[in-house]
Image (cartoon, helix red, strand yellow):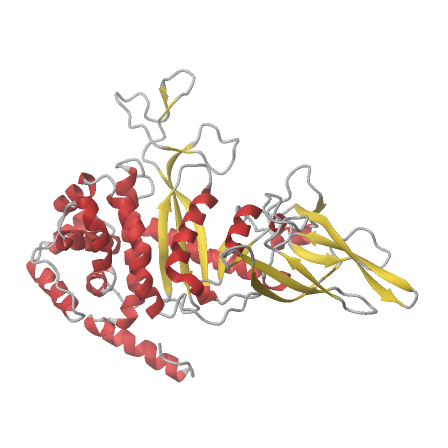
Length: 484
């Protein structure tokens, strides 16, 4: 939390945050429960992330005075909570009674959180800078796997159970996640979760925009579903979408044709494709310490002839690790010292139907002249439209000088996942209850994380928050910054 120094202050801030009524209204037709009943269990699923334990939370709520304080805090922002507090028993029955409560909560989460996210200055429609999207207008996606309590599985050949607990009577069979590689035939035990988030430069301005699960061997497909849901709600407030190295060219085209710039780092070049060996001093720069890059994509695109007197100065253009580079006159193949073309700008143009075309303008380095060229990043490698041979598999639209921003943006959502695994013991329990129940718990984490945004606005409603709120305001004023 932002200003909360104890779980009790967390409870008060969560009870006052907006959006819960909208979620309850959206979930009501699928649960046959009253909105008050849904509301208090949404509070419970968010609250126990503050305590880290449902038992501890239930013991705290058993104290009648605490529920009265929570209701009073909510009443100050116009919310009337039910007379009776939720309990672990009622929460478990509610979560397990309705088979789609998790997926319905996840679907309602995206539009319900929009007013809160925008009130914090995130994803607000502004004039875009396509070549360098603003952090507050860039959504970030990532996926992780919450490990299962057991890795027991059924062998597809023998039909027998095997794993660490396969010899204990009737072992629990964990759902299998098949990973990101087709070679992972047997799969791994656990629940894969995808998440979309956004944050600004301030430490408390972090929001979870959407969550979901996936088992179809395609993390990016799950991220694209969340991307579509986010774009439907926030529209022109989304200027960029940062993801890791998994997003392929076709999915990048989908992002670009929706009017959003993808910010994706290049993976290692696949076997049998044109590539260039990466020198040792660049392997961790272009990759990471855990996964250094050893082979970079190096693909010829076109040539540019610059008239010089009665002759021409010819430059061959290559896509080298996602950047556009040019050879010097007389040089055929590029090297790591080849000069990158300067990106002058990016712009969107309306194409067929509502699809957007992302056009990049580049200046080719030449000792005689500096010609300008245009490249359509949302097209395919031949310049035509509608094929799977995406240019984005070779050439990324974000200029080489700003690609490092992608690393920092991805760390935002990775740190959010780290927080979720640290706050609650869902990691290692992924098959202890149904997958929909698990998703409902993850939605609760999104509510808890987003209440930090609201904590800035409702600090005056929490006993300990007023002092922290004033300290932050005074610190910003002393530093010459504007208040929130």
